[in-house]
Length: 386
Image (tube, rainbow, N blue to C red):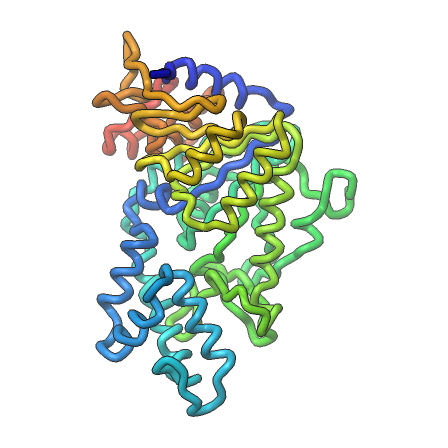
Protein backbone atom coordinates (compact mmCIF):
# COMPACT_ATOMS: atom_id res chain seq x y z
CA UNK A 1 0.00 0.00 0.00
CA UNK A 2 1.36 3.50 -0.83
CA UNK A 3 2.52 5.65 2.08
CA UNK A 4 3.34 9.33 2.58
CA UNK A 5 6.06 11.05 4.59
CA UNK A 6 4.53 13.62 6.97
CA UNK A 7 7.77 15.55 7.47
CA UNK A 8 8.29 15.82 3.73
CA UNK A 9 4.78 17.26 3.44
CA UNK A 10 5.56 19.80 6.18
CA UNK A 11 8.77 20.84 4.44
CA UNK A 12 7.12 21.14 1.03
CA UNK A 13 4.27 23.21 2.40
CA UNK A 14 6.73 25.57 4.09
CA UNK A 15 8.51 26.11 0.78
CA UNK A 16 5.24 26.82 -1.02
CA UNK A 17 4.10 29.32 1.61
CA UNK A 18 7.49 31.04 1.46
CA UNK A 19 7.01 31.89 -2.22
CA UNK A 20 5.89 35.50 -2.02
CA UNK A 21 4.43 35.52 -5.53
CA UNK A 22 1.77 32.99 -4.51
CA UNK A 23 -1.81 33.99 -3.88
CA UNK A 24 -2.64 32.52 -0.46
CA UNK A 25 -6.18 31.83 0.75
CA UNK A 26 -7.63 30.08 3.77
CA UNK A 27 -11.12 28.64 4.18
CA UNK A 28 -12.08 28.03 7.80
CA UNK A 29 -15.03 25.95 8.89
CA UNK A 30 -16.60 25.07 12.23
CA UNK A 31 -13.56 23.03 13.30
CA UNK A 32 -11.52 26.22 13.72
CA UNK A 33 -14.10 27.61 16.13
CA UNK A 34 -14.43 24.26 17.90
CA UNK A 35 -10.68 24.40 18.56
CA UNK A 36 -11.41 27.56 20.53
CA UNK A 37 -14.18 25.91 22.55
CA UNK A 38 -17.25 27.07 20.61
CA UNK A 39 -19.94 24.64 19.42
CA UNK A 40 -19.93 23.32 15.87
CA UNK A 41 -23.07 23.52 13.73
CA UNK A 42 -24.48 20.24 15.00
CA UNK A 43 -23.90 21.17 18.64
CA UNK A 44 -25.30 24.64 18.05
CA UNK A 45 -28.45 23.17 16.53
CA UNK A 46 -28.92 20.94 19.58
CA UNK A 47 -28.46 23.83 21.99
CA UNK A 48 -30.95 25.96 20.09
CA UNK A 49 -33.57 23.20 20.16
CA UNK A 50 -33.01 22.58 23.89
CA UNK A 51 -33.64 26.24 24.76
CA UNK A 52 -36.77 26.83 22.69
CA UNK A 53 -40.21 26.71 24.25
CA UNK A 54 -42.17 23.50 23.79
CA UNK A 55 -44.29 24.87 20.94
CA UNK A 56 -41.33 26.50 19.19
CA UNK A 57 -39.29 23.33 19.62
CA UNK A 58 -41.96 21.26 17.88
CA UNK A 59 -42.20 23.77 15.03
CA UNK A 60 -38.45 24.00 14.58
CA UNK A 61 -38.04 20.22 14.66
CA UNK A 62 -40.54 20.07 11.79
CA UNK A 63 -38.31 22.42 9.80
CA UNK A 64 -35.21 20.39 10.70
CA UNK A 65 -36.66 17.20 9.20
CA UNK A 66 -34.47 16.46 6.19
CA UNK A 67 -32.57 19.74 6.54
CA UNK A 68 -29.56 21.01 8.44
CA UNK A 69 -29.70 23.86 10.91
CA UNK A 70 -28.97 26.63 8.39
CA UNK A 71 -31.47 25.31 5.87
CA UNK A 72 -34.17 25.14 8.54
CA UNK A 73 -33.56 28.74 9.61
CA UNK A 74 -33.58 29.80 5.97
CA UNK A 75 -36.94 28.11 5.44
CA UNK A 76 -38.47 29.81 8.48
CA UNK A 77 -37.45 33.19 7.03
CA UNK A 78 -38.83 32.22 3.65
CA UNK A 79 -42.18 31.26 5.18
CA UNK A 80 -42.26 34.51 7.16
CA UNK A 81 -41.69 36.56 3.98
CA UNK A 82 -44.46 34.77 2.06
CA UNK A 83 -47.20 34.80 4.73
CA UNK A 84 -49.55 37.69 5.45
CA UNK A 85 -51.24 38.19 8.80
CA UNK A 86 -52.80 35.02 10.18
CA UNK A 87 -52.13 32.85 7.15
CA UNK A 88 -50.84 29.51 8.38
CA UNK A 89 -48.18 27.28 6.85
CA UNK A 90 -46.46 24.35 8.57
CA UNK A 91 -47.63 25.61 11.94
CA UNK A 92 -46.29 29.12 11.37
CA UNK A 93 -47.92 32.51 10.90
CA UNK A 94 -46.07 35.65 9.88
CA UNK A 95 -45.82 36.73 13.52
CA UNK A 96 -44.84 33.34 14.94
CA UNK A 97 -42.19 32.87 12.24
CA UNK A 98 -40.72 36.25 13.13
CA UNK A 99 -40.77 35.38 16.84
CA UNK A 100 -39.10 32.00 16.19
CA UNK A 101 -36.43 33.64 14.00
CA UNK A 102 -35.66 36.17 16.74
CA UNK A 103 -35.47 33.49 19.43
CA UNK A 104 -33.17 31.27 17.39
CA UNK A 105 -30.86 34.21 16.68
CA UNK A 106 -30.88 35.23 20.34
CA UNK A 107 -29.74 31.74 21.34
CA UNK A 108 -27.11 31.64 18.57
CA UNK A 109 -25.60 34.94 19.68
CA UNK A 110 -25.55 33.74 23.31
CA UNK A 111 -24.00 30.37 22.49
CA UNK A 112 -21.34 31.95 20.26
CA UNK A 113 -20.26 34.43 22.91
CA UNK A 114 -16.44 34.38 22.84
CA UNK A 115 -15.87 35.94 26.27
CA UNK A 116 -14.81 32.55 27.67
CA UNK A 117 -13.35 31.08 24.48
CA UNK A 118 -9.78 29.81 24.25
CA UNK A 119 -8.41 32.42 21.86
CA UNK A 120 -4.95 30.83 21.45
CA UNK A 121 -5.61 28.89 18.19
CA UNK A 122 -7.19 31.87 16.43
CA UNK A 123 -4.56 34.27 17.77
CA UNK A 124 -1.83 32.02 16.35
CA UNK A 125 -3.61 32.15 13.01
CA UNK A 126 -3.88 35.95 13.29
CA UNK A 127 -0.17 36.18 14.11
CA UNK A 128 0.61 34.41 10.85
CA UNK A 129 -1.69 36.70 8.85
CA UNK A 130 -0.17 39.77 10.50
CA UNK A 131 3.29 38.83 9.19
CA UNK A 132 2.34 37.29 5.84
CA UNK A 133 3.78 39.33 2.99
CA UNK A 134 2.66 38.39 -0.50
CA UNK A 135 2.21 40.18 -3.80
CA UNK A 136 -1.54 39.76 -3.37
CA UNK A 137 -3.42 40.04 -0.07
CA UNK A 138 -4.08 36.98 2.08
CA UNK A 139 -7.76 36.14 1.76
CA UNK A 140 -9.51 34.41 4.65
CA UNK A 141 -12.93 32.91 3.98
CA UNK A 142 -15.04 31.50 6.78
CA UNK A 143 -18.52 30.03 7.16
CA UNK A 144 -18.49 30.68 10.92
CA UNK A 145 -20.77 33.33 12.46
CA UNK A 146 -18.73 34.07 15.58
CA UNK A 147 -16.34 36.97 16.17
CA UNK A 148 -13.21 34.93 16.91
CA UNK A 149 -11.27 35.97 13.81
CA UNK A 150 -12.08 39.68 14.09
CA UNK A 151 -11.14 39.68 17.77
CA UNK A 152 -7.85 37.88 17.11
CA UNK A 153 -7.05 40.19 14.19
CA UNK A 154 -7.65 43.24 16.36
CA UNK A 155 -5.51 41.80 19.16
CA UNK A 156 -2.52 41.39 16.82
CA UNK A 157 -2.97 44.54 14.79
CA UNK A 158 -3.97 42.84 11.56
CA UNK A 159 -5.16 45.41 9.03
CA UNK A 160 -8.05 43.86 7.14
CA UNK A 161 -11.05 44.63 4.97
CA UNK A 162 -14.28 42.62 5.29
CA UNK A 163 -16.41 44.22 2.60
CA UNK A 164 -17.87 46.88 4.90
CA UNK A 165 -16.83 50.46 5.59
CA UNK A 166 -17.80 52.22 8.80
CA UNK A 167 -17.87 51.46 12.51
CA UNK A 168 -21.33 51.75 14.07
CA UNK A 169 -23.43 50.72 11.05
CA UNK A 170 -20.83 49.78 8.41
CA UNK A 171 -22.13 49.62 4.85
CA UNK A 172 -21.30 46.87 2.38
CA UNK A 173 -19.13 48.16 -0.49
CA UNK A 174 -19.26 45.89 -3.50
CA UNK A 175 -17.01 48.08 -5.65
CA UNK A 176 -14.17 47.71 -3.13
CA UNK A 177 -14.69 43.97 -2.78
CA UNK A 178 -14.58 43.40 -6.52
CA UNK A 179 -11.70 45.83 -7.21
CA UNK A 180 -8.48 44.59 -8.81
CA UNK A 181 -4.94 46.00 -8.53
CA UNK A 182 -5.43 47.82 -11.84
CA UNK A 183 -8.17 49.97 -10.26
CA UNK A 184 -5.98 52.22 -8.14
CA UNK A 185 -8.88 54.33 -6.95
CA UNK A 186 -10.73 51.36 -5.43
CA UNK A 187 -8.01 48.78 -4.73
CA UNK A 188 -6.83 48.37 -1.15
CA UNK A 189 -3.11 47.51 -0.81
CA UNK A 190 -2.05 43.90 -0.23
CA UNK A 191 -0.99 44.48 3.38
CA UNK A 192 -4.71 44.70 4.13
CA UNK A 193 -5.81 41.10 4.59
CA UNK A 194 -9.27 40.23 3.33
CA UNK A 195 -11.83 38.60 5.62
CA UNK A 196 -14.91 37.22 3.90
CA UNK A 197 -17.70 35.76 6.09
CA UNK A 198 -19.59 33.64 3.59
CA UNK A 199 -22.53 32.78 5.87
CA UNK A 200 -22.83 36.08 7.69
CA UNK A 201 -22.06 36.97 11.27
CA UNK A 202 -23.59 37.56 14.67
CA UNK A 203 -22.83 41.28 14.20
CA UNK A 204 -24.57 41.58 10.83
CA UNK A 205 -28.19 42.73 10.62
CA UNK A 206 -30.70 44.10 8.14
CA UNK A 207 -31.31 47.84 8.46
CA UNK A 208 -34.51 49.77 7.76
CA UNK A 209 -33.83 49.67 4.03
CA UNK A 210 -33.41 45.88 4.10
CA UNK A 211 -29.65 46.13 3.47
CA UNK A 212 -27.09 44.19 5.49
CA UNK A 213 -24.91 46.30 7.78
CA UNK A 214 -22.13 45.33 10.16
CA UNK A 215 -22.43 46.53 13.75
CA UNK A 216 -19.62 47.21 16.19
CA UNK A 217 -20.91 44.35 18.38
CA UNK A 218 -23.28 41.39 18.23
CA UNK A 219 -26.91 42.15 17.35
CA UNK A 220 -29.37 42.85 20.13
CA UNK A 221 -32.11 40.52 21.31
CA UNK A 222 -34.78 42.21 19.20
CA UNK A 223 -33.02 41.87 15.85
CA UNK A 224 -32.35 38.71 13.80
CA UNK A 225 -28.72 38.26 12.82
CA UNK A 226 -28.01 38.23 9.08
CA UNK A 227 -26.79 34.65 8.80
CA UNK A 228 -27.28 32.17 5.97
CA UNK A 229 -30.27 33.77 4.19
CA UNK A 230 -32.65 31.88 1.97
CA UNK A 231 -31.56 31.08 -1.55
CA UNK A 232 -35.03 31.94 -2.80
CA UNK A 233 -35.48 35.14 -4.82
CA UNK A 234 -38.37 36.63 -2.89
CA UNK A 235 -36.13 39.48 -1.76
CA UNK A 236 -32.81 39.86 -3.58
CA UNK A 237 -31.63 42.65 -1.27
CA UNK A 238 -31.47 40.24 1.66
CA UNK A 239 -29.20 37.91 -0.31
CA UNK A 240 -27.03 40.59 -1.87
CA UNK A 241 -23.75 40.42 0.15
CA UNK A 242 -23.86 36.63 0.38
CA UNK A 243 -24.04 36.24 -3.40
CA UNK A 244 -21.16 38.70 -3.90
CA UNK A 245 -19.02 36.97 -1.25
CA UNK A 246 -19.50 33.52 -2.75
CA UNK A 247 -18.52 34.95 -6.11
CA UNK A 248 -15.42 36.39 -4.42
CA UNK A 249 -14.49 32.86 -3.31
CA UNK A 250 -14.91 31.60 -6.87
CA UNK A 251 -12.69 34.36 -8.26
CA UNK A 252 -10.08 33.96 -5.52
CA UNK A 253 -9.74 30.22 -6.12
CA UNK A 254 -9.48 30.85 -9.85
CA UNK A 255 -6.56 33.25 -9.42
CA UNK A 256 -3.42 31.68 -10.98
CA UNK A 257 -0.77 30.32 -8.60
CA UNK A 258 -3.21 30.13 -5.69
CA UNK A 259 -2.60 27.95 -2.64
CA UNK A 260 -5.76 27.47 -0.60
CA UNK A 261 -5.63 25.99 2.91
CA UNK A 262 -8.94 24.48 4.03
CA UNK A 263 -9.26 23.74 7.75
CA UNK A 264 -12.15 22.78 9.98
CA UNK A 265 -14.52 22.43 7.01
CA UNK A 266 -16.38 19.13 6.65
CA UNK A 267 -17.34 19.65 2.99
CA UNK A 268 -21.01 19.69 3.87
CA UNK A 269 -21.95 22.63 1.64
CA UNK A 270 -22.30 21.29 -1.88
CA UNK A 271 -22.22 24.71 -3.50
CA UNK A 272 -18.92 25.63 -1.86
CA UNK A 273 -17.58 22.17 -2.66
CA UNK A 274 -18.22 22.65 -6.36
CA UNK A 275 -16.42 25.99 -6.30
CA UNK A 276 -13.38 24.27 -4.78
CA UNK A 277 -13.47 21.26 -7.09
CA UNK A 278 -13.96 23.39 -10.18
CA UNK A 279 -11.04 25.68 -9.33
CA UNK A 280 -8.73 22.73 -8.63
CA UNK A 281 -9.58 21.07 -11.93
CA UNK A 282 -9.26 24.24 -14.00
CA UNK A 283 -6.11 25.70 -12.42
CA UNK A 284 -3.50 22.97 -12.54
CA UNK A 285 -0.75 25.24 -11.16
CA UNK A 286 -2.85 26.16 -8.13
CA UNK A 287 -3.31 23.91 -5.12
CA UNK A 288 -6.06 23.23 -2.62
CA UNK A 289 -4.91 21.55 0.60
CA UNK A 290 -7.83 20.31 2.68
CA UNK A 291 -7.04 19.28 6.26
CA UNK A 292 -9.49 16.63 7.43
CA UNK A 293 -9.67 16.11 11.19
CA UNK A 294 -12.21 13.29 10.94
CA UNK A 295 -12.56 10.60 8.30
CA UNK A 296 -12.06 11.90 4.77
CA UNK A 297 -15.50 12.46 3.16
CA UNK A 298 -16.06 10.01 0.32
CA UNK A 299 -16.89 12.65 -2.28
CA UNK A 300 -13.79 14.67 -1.37
CA UNK A 301 -11.64 11.54 -1.60
CA UNK A 302 -13.07 10.68 -5.01
CA UNK A 303 -12.34 14.17 -6.33
CA UNK A 304 -8.82 14.23 -4.86
CA UNK A 305 -7.94 10.87 -6.44
CA UNK A 306 -8.66 12.30 -9.88
CA UNK A 307 -7.36 15.85 -9.24
CA UNK A 308 -3.65 15.81 -8.28
CA UNK A 309 -3.56 19.43 -7.10
CA UNK A 310 -6.39 18.78 -4.64
CA UNK A 311 -4.65 17.32 -1.60
CA UNK A 312 -6.44 15.90 1.43
CA UNK A 313 -4.47 15.68 4.64
CA UNK A 314 -5.91 13.47 7.36
CA UNK A 315 -4.49 12.40 10.70
CA UNK A 316 -3.81 8.79 9.69
CA UNK A 317 -3.78 9.01 5.90
CA UNK A 318 -3.54 11.48 3.03
CA UNK A 319 -4.30 11.85 -0.65
CA UNK A 320 -1.36 13.60 -2.27
CA UNK A 321 -0.82 13.83 -6.01
CA UNK A 322 -3.83 11.62 -6.58
CA UNK A 323 -2.38 8.82 -4.43
CA UNK A 324 -4.09 7.67 -1.26
CA UNK A 325 -1.92 6.22 1.44
CA UNK A 326 -1.23 6.02 5.17
CA UNK A 327 1.35 8.19 6.87
CA UNK A 328 4.77 6.74 7.55
CA UNK A 329 5.75 7.08 11.18
CA UNK A 330 8.70 9.54 11.31
CA UNK A 331 11.99 8.30 12.78
CA UNK A 332 12.41 11.38 14.96
CA UNK A 333 8.87 12.70 15.40
CA UNK A 334 8.29 16.27 16.53
CA UNK A 335 5.29 16.67 18.79
CA UNK A 336 4.25 19.77 16.87
CA UNK A 337 3.54 17.55 13.86
CA UNK A 338 3.28 13.93 15.03
CA UNK A 339 1.70 12.68 18.24
CA UNK A 340 0.09 9.40 19.31
CA UNK A 341 0.79 7.95 15.85
CA UNK A 342 -1.21 10.69 14.16
CA UNK A 343 -0.32 13.67 11.97
CA UNK A 344 -1.35 16.77 13.89
CA UNK A 345 -1.81 19.50 11.26
CA UNK A 346 -5.45 18.53 10.54
CA UNK A 347 -6.10 19.89 14.05
CA UNK A 348 -6.58 23.65 13.59
CA UNK A 349 -4.63 24.43 16.77
CA UNK A 350 -1.54 22.67 15.43
CA UNK A 351 -2.00 24.09 11.93
CA UNK A 352 -2.24 27.62 13.32
CA UNK A 353 0.88 27.02 15.43
CA UNK A 354 2.72 25.73 12.35
CA UNK A 355 1.72 28.80 10.33
CA UNK A 356 2.72 31.14 13.14
CA UNK A 357 6.25 29.73 13.08
CA UNK A 358 6.92 31.14 9.62
CA UNK A 359 9.16 34.20 9.87
CA UNK A 360 10.73 35.82 12.88
CA UNK A 361 8.50 36.48 15.86
CA UNK A 362 8.85 39.78 17.70
CA UNK A 363 8.51 38.64 21.30
CA UNK A 364 8.85 42.25 22.49
CA UNK A 365 5.42 42.98 21.09
CA UNK A 366 3.09 43.03 24.14
CA UNK A 367 0.39 41.11 22.25
CA UNK A 368 2.91 38.39 21.35
CA UNK A 369 4.23 38.18 24.92
CA UNK A 370 0.68 37.79 26.12
CA UNK A 371 0.10 35.09 23.50
CA UNK A 372 3.19 33.19 24.68
CA UNK A 373 1.78 33.29 28.21
CA UNK A 374 -1.58 31.97 27.02
CA UNK A 375 0.15 29.26 25.00
CA UNK A 376 2.17 28.13 28.00
CA UNK A 377 -1.03 27.85 29.99
CA UNK A 378 -2.55 25.77 27.16
CA UNK A 379 0.65 23.69 26.74
CA UNK A 380 1.17 24.85 23.15
CA UNK A 381 4.70 25.70 22.04
CA UNK A 382 6.37 27.62 19.24
CA UNK A 383 9.80 26.29 18.33
CA UNK A 384 10.96 29.70 17.20
CA UNK A 385 10.23 31.59 20.39
CA UNK A 386 13.26 33.84 20.90
